[in-house]
Length: 343
Image (cartoon, rainbow, N blue to C red):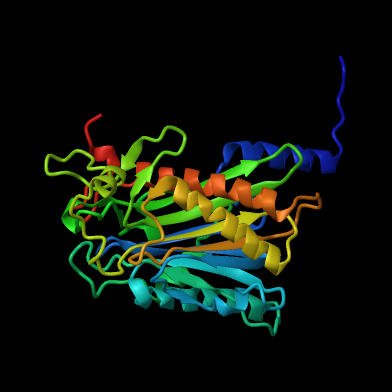
């Protein structure tokens, strides 16, 4: 009988590869943990993306109506910025308080380690206040604390949870013709060990399109309940709310890699990854959207990969995550989901 001996380091590598094969969400990137907290009073919540030991971060922002916190630090013009977490939240500007709760959770653990450095927790929010009829119910600091406390390395829950609980999409014909958005996640693992993942909360004005097929997944509905197709509406000059819609749409995302990047390179990755939004949402980056993409580099992988390659992979992961968000979403607050439609 042939006996195969596996040294500990090889066994660890094999176990990590097996775990990655079972997890194709952003937590496949080592050092990334994700926690959702969903409020029960109405569909809303927050999502915390923790970077164990901190991560170099960057950002791209192309929507015209963003709601963010502590993002100046991520400017490519500044010194390399390390962050401890990113928070995505519903609740419009009120939801920015979720980041304070996540920071408090991190601070308690830093205090236990006698670390004097305050936690850095940038955040972005989406507007879901009209969904469910109780706009006074929105995520706060307690939501962020609870989401951070339950963050795990396991596959990320997707659909109408956390920051995606009250998200909607396809509002080109108004809110009464919209469909449920949500939160989705995807990742790419290369044979050389490079990993790139994304998590996206989809609360877009536009429709969601599967870039692999060009087929509509979810979007604005015609009077008979069928897809109106935003692409067709815009080309035919049909009457839409595009010119008068309030700024209550936003798609917010985090991409992560285990590569080593500078702050400037991380910002470039975020800019390239933003292309994934354009592949899967139409229209995108309108006056009524506050689209924001964060990038995290944990640096655990010692291979060589440039920002262009990582960004291209991140764009693929972002597009896939958007499609998953729409497909996993469930109806809420009277807004139907893609899974409710007849096949």
